[in-house]
Length: 92
Image (tube, rainbow, N blue to C red):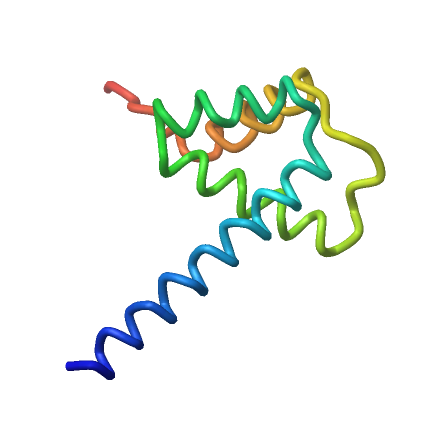
């Protein structure tokens, strides 16, 4: 029982560290306005927010982000990612 509690504590600590690192990376690549928009997206569509965060972290770690992403650029990114997910219904 004690081992399970210790494992749970360790997992929670690891999750906390991952979330802190994710927040640090996102604050280094998004402007304040873009981070606010991401927070709003997280409330409305958590899956999309997670997808965007993972994408931004991958691009950041690959060294492809040279400057802060503005709110306008972030909106364009959201549009690009949501267009890929849309399906069209064709009536015949």
